[in-house]
Length: 306
Image 1 (cartoon, helix red, strand yellow):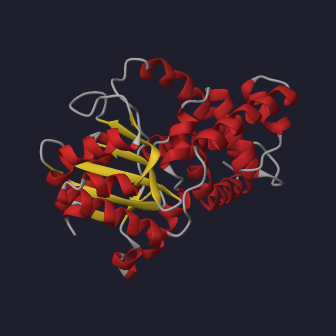
Image 2: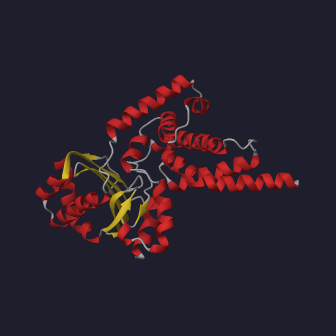
Image 3: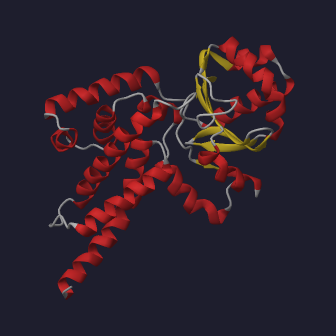
């Protein structure tokens, strides 16, 4: 390799590192898994290293499109496997300690992780979209890529690609409205929920739950939490009253995908549980219980260590 070629490769490597966080954010929104997102980003580097696109004008855009292509292939393969998944599939959560528990030396890492996070409710809705709809929505609505750049990836015209994003946008707006923005208010609601759970206070739970609340469970496709979602305040309150007293006293506060949540590092019979909340209008509109140890086991280890 000549000196100019080496210099060019070093420049590409440095630019790739500059965009790594952005690419990871694209891939996580596409795949709902930080593990798979990291794999997709690494594959993008392999493709860049193997086939220099040339020029320096828009390497960020080229990498974004490349990651989108990789993720689209993953989604298409995964869609057929998901048909045999028992219960509800939930994304791999991004979990950190609450701000008042964050150690000073953890702050840069925490900020980088939270920059990649997106609400669980949105990820759950994205999972219901077709791979092409998901890619069009994520790349255009979230990251601002024009439709004429997205269209070749999904093998559609720009106009048809615009329609894909429009359908996805309507689904997102209808099923994943924004949660309350204030994390302190969210935490107050979650703390009240834990207190009512510990006490088995059915009436107290009903006051905290939105009438249309949805409770989703992911047990990794097997086990006691491999079940369809529960809907409605009364049904959810009964379920929480049944198991809440066992687990609420063990729950540790956490930030789950940017919103208030809890981690139970040693849930009896389960291992680690991560519970994410969607709080809207001062009430809990969504609960996402993830007991898939492949996704949440390492999180329990971190919280168990204090």
